[in-house]
Image (spheres, rainbow, N blue to C red):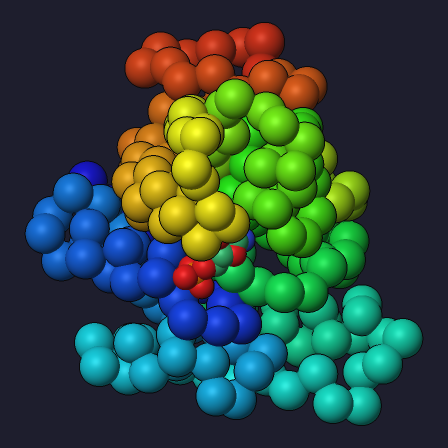
Length: 216
Ligand code: GRF
């Protein structure tokens, strides 16, 4: 099977990037890491990329205040330079603009540490605990122009325990993130994801009612 070329955008520690690297190396994920791009010069994710001989690039946001689309145009150039087919947001702490989405239509994925559409935004594990929900989890979705609003690909449910803290809950959710992100990318690589409106279906056949996302 042809490997899908990934461009991973990061800002920090990069544990989701690491899980993707590990799953590629153990043969569970038919993908190739074409480039890792960080908006932060000292992101540990860049170090992880370096250790595995993956091109790592720092694209500084300095000078782009109020010009998010211009910053995204630089990202698009860099991603295209590396022939990226699927853009993977993994702890990238910037809001994406249409400039990136138009260049990669339905080819930008994100992972979010809550069961969307509940708890979009930041500090969501704390918000889930404070709200008193009994279950939280994580969501992989295609990115659209809203904040954590795009079509949902996979979710994993994590029960909330009586003695949970923000840290303990975050750690249990993160463990699930490391599994479902690679699973979603693999379904994309296999050309099995069909997007019809807000719904993403997993299929083996040709589906004329939706847009067939292939990896030819
Ligand atoms: C993860 O919790 C992810 O869901 C969120 O940001 C965090 C990134 O963690 N979008 P890491 O950098 O992948 O370790």
